[in-house]
Length: 84
Image (cartoon, rainbow, N blue to C red; front, top):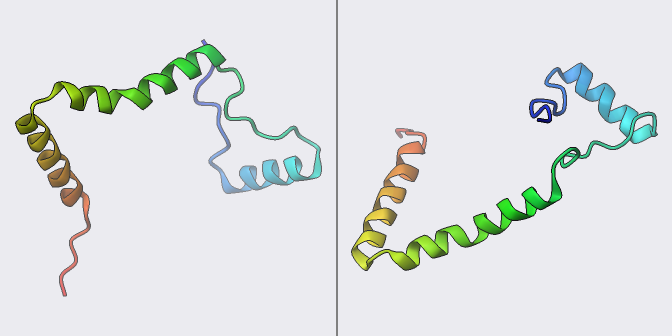
């Protein structure tokens, strides 16, 4: 299984060096899809595109309303509370 945690460095100095090396041609450009199976990527994307619509089509109007009410409550709960 490929190493998934190998992304860009978190250290700002290392990240800066990597970006400069890529810009000057010392290092190859960073490819976030390197090492991924294209068939698996396409399959996951396709499932993500149809998932919400297929789920909503199976729900009754009351279930859709309840799901949207819970989603709105979750979004409002994430808002920072500022008092004026």
